[in-house]
Length: 145
Image 1 (tube, rainbow, N blue to C red):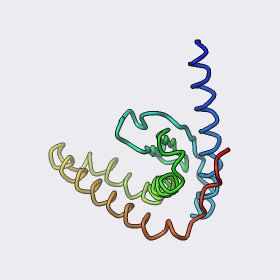
Image 2 (image 1 turned 60 degrees about the vertical axis):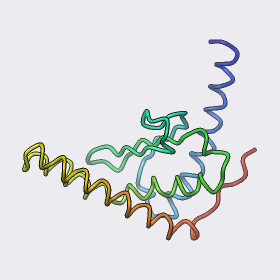
Image 3 (image 1 turned 30 degrees about the horizontal axis):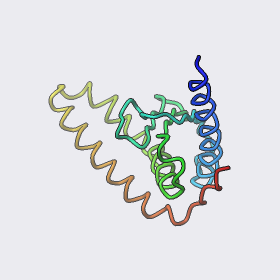
Image 4 (image 1 turned 90 degrees about the horizontal axis):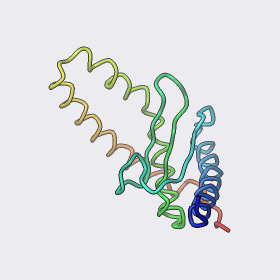
């Protein structure tokens, strides 16, 4: 590992610890304390260079992997909005599983794809609206040192 790679790795660890602490605060404020969250800060959440974050709940468990984009960590307003948004996705995990796991077997693949895309879009709009409503009520991130 080169010196630059070591510096990059240390920065990623530092950013991840900072985000983990903030996620824990908002998780508790939103009454999601029973969820076990694996947090990481990466350049491309979910492999998407245009994404601010990715939330991937595990089937049938109150456990999720969350990735946050490096570029949002130093912007407190963006970090707050993004963390709140991703945490709010945890509330609809069970209803999402009904569609994702049950309906795929009940419908043909074409019908399921239409249903899934419509459901996914409407769920994202719902989470966006809930985020806008709740963010003013949530704790701000501590300044990063």
